[in-house]
Length: 431
Image (tube, rainbow, N blue to C red; front, side):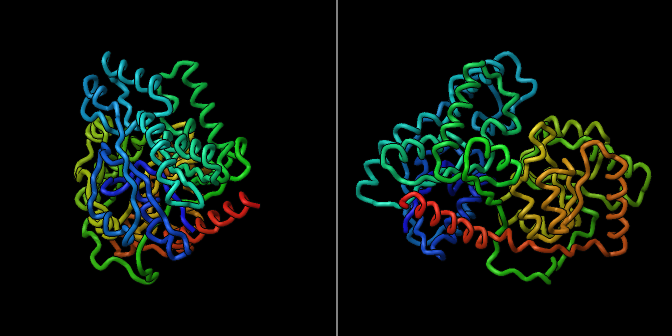
């Protein structure tokens, strides 16, 4: 059985976008499925991480085709990076920045990779005449990739699975885009076509599933996860930090800025000299200027901005940190946000402190696995109580975690679930 996986993000791309399907591809052969990957020949990846290439299976067939991206046009209007994530929309873009945002929102639908759609369809239709596959999978964002899958399904009469690592019109920054009424309608129309015509739809959480079920009758939750060759539930990091370290891994934009945390930590430092001496905050990944400004205004000291690190180095920081921090975007779609790093945190087996909706998908995972606590965006009292308790345990050498049921999030187990969905989709399509 052979499947074609269409993805924009592929090694040497770094960051969260590449992890999901890199790991699925790593294990698919264990379930008698041969993956073929189609990706870009000349991508503009904001993050590059060559260490991820070690997970590529031997003799994997990877098809590459060039793409024309208009990001160079945006470089004229905005700084610092034309290819930076749309999630980092500048809240104060200035005149030229507003022009760039308007153009990008209304002239490049569904996204700036739209010019890859038709060339890819032509290339793959020709290629697939000789290389027969049983099923097509597209994974977005960018959601232009789904339109490639849609066209191939229609033209080649093949079953197709659309995988949503993030929502489309429900993504956290969508309502910040300066969309005209016609552009908004076009987004919804394209999203509806994809959800309606895909033979199966994969999503990463229950809230997204609930939102999509109005448009698709075959939605499956297949979460992100963590990966390691061997799991030993009894092992713990050999050398924990000697400081009371709180570590956040991943990009932090202005919507994900936990102002409440900076202020509570600053207050604790003022109130308790021992806490101030022991405390250390580590931020790994791109931190928006607005977040850095908030931290500075709070007066919080002992902050280390470590920038982007490769995946292997990130593991080391996670496993040695006293506490791992998760911050959910404070947006209307917050309940459905489950950042991929929560599963890497689970593997590290360090206590998780999350700030976000206490009735959301992330809260449910933390409760099920007993991996940490979540505090509402405005509950400073509860946040302070949790931090003081963690600090007391740190002073007594007892900052530990006895999490449960995390094996269900191992990438190999998730790939087994994916293989069942693939085989059932093929069988149903041909029945």
